[in-house]
Image (tube, rainbow, N blue to C red; front, top):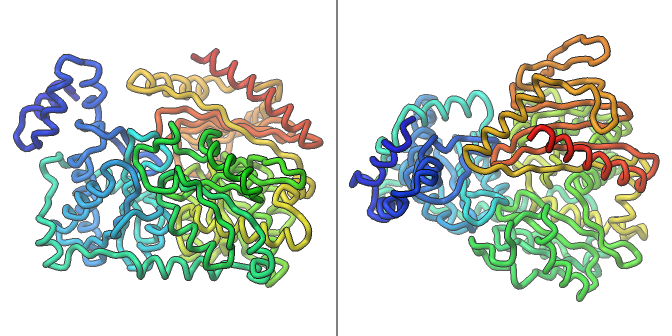
Length: 575
């Protein structure tokens, strides 16, 4: 692609509005910036479009959103499902309401009804709304936990999950076949008058809340202890504030303290550099408030409220951070264990995790006698399994989660849901309080039952065109030079998901992975340790996930720290 030619078209053609042309003319002498904005189209990753807000084909703006929506509309019409409508939600980020309207009016101009939320809503509620309204698709305008300069565009299919094959490839084919000037639109009032633009809100909210309440196992414990528990919560300037507080209030949790500085929606995220519940800085204000209130647990949802970060207090008053693997394992054990105790487990029950999620739950599934299913990274693949269970009647979904702070309890949605996770953790706190345990006690009990697994991640951020090339070079090196040893651990199996091979490093036998093609390598190591390397699908990063097992938690943490140091040295060598 001749990036300069495309730049000149955008900066001079009156098709593009004056603000866009002025923004581009201001960088006319900056070749590097022009190239960054125009060297390639912004493409779908694991969560659809995601990019920096600004003018250009490699940026998030009205024209890129309209083009993506026109491609989606063309695909819907090819499938002859245009009479079903599309649900649209948006978060608190800059330009989110505007992008939502751009998408809605493009759909309307194509004769496809848009159901648009009246204000910001969490991602899981959009997933729920798609199925509740019997829509053919859904769009959520969000960049999840990315920095403030980003926004994004997640696409969901009729099952309520983010798009997977063949729909992802089919939609992208349609998007690539058109230019931004091919996207249709129409006046908003005309769309409303013709019944092609409908505002939605309260009815969906109430139905979503009703579904969450059905998942409560121990309302008796909430009734008895919920009024005593103290909970500090922060929505990190995002969408979780109203639904998280509503569900806790209606269930009977009376002492929920919201971090005032982070309560209201704000796309600039002024109190954090990075609105990510994985980051320690996201909890600074919440932990301060927790100590003032002597809170039992501290919760943070990311801006689109699909991921939940957690701190829990032990009996000595110390707060402990739970990683996504820890909170996911704690919730899985609580939900499946209480399900077994109260009504029994189905014979075809399944626990689903991504390939980079802790192996602790492999042992958990074994002890509960349920099936353990691994999928590629991206909750859409867990949603895909849920759809398969429905269509083939070959499994019952019990719980699914990823290491990146995302899980789903129930089948009301087909994406990770931090609102239901918030509800379930608070319920679990009430239950454990009824047997004189804290959530930290429960976490230690999980380790005692299943083994001391400690998992972590090292991330390398490599921005721009050069960064993309470096990431590709690292992946190519690993695929072409399979290590025999990593961090002092012998490699037993090498999995290359790009060419669908699992190689036994002892006898060199090769079998297929059984999963879709993906730019990922994975190494099973001696002693139950492992390493997985994959580029992020939503950020300019390459990620090194790993896990170790120790005799006790202290040893496991020490082994994990040493493993992490070795990974950093390996990265340095490859750079």
